[in-house]
Length: 222
Image (cartoon, rainbow, N blue to C red):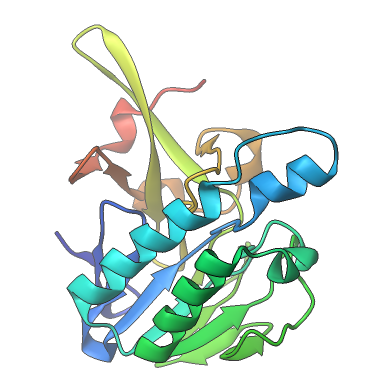
């Protein structure tokens, strides 16, 4: 499956990553690493396994695509201090991944400060006529963003299914959240209103191990 956007071709992955084959570049949004450890420091004692699971998922995608560059579109860490709370095993895995490819960290609203983990820390990244950044903008042209954790809900065989999704028109694409501990937001919710030209909207929904193109006419709220 391919997504055509702003004159370029991308391959969405069932994990929520987006592979730009022509540039050998892998895009991921909203990893939210160390989310559970952040909750634990605030008194909610949750198992701190989310970082390791997300990094293993990312390792698989990097190996399978052979990507030479990875761009993380912000909120890679749930809080800025998450870069210092990584367990030794998770830090070693992340270091190994960063040795495999060039790494670009874009700042998000959860992790705005640059860090010293390696790679480049940028506010946004412009490449081949596209702009990659964390938060979407209404007047954007050729923008790929994250932040909103988009999900599609459809009715099938008398029951509803809600999954993360890629959503775009001719100007803007919003990617699903990649991290295993992230929630999602229905693309019919008010947060998405006015971002897209509805007549042009295209939705690619994530399944368990494959992706599905969904007509906007089949989308339901909730």
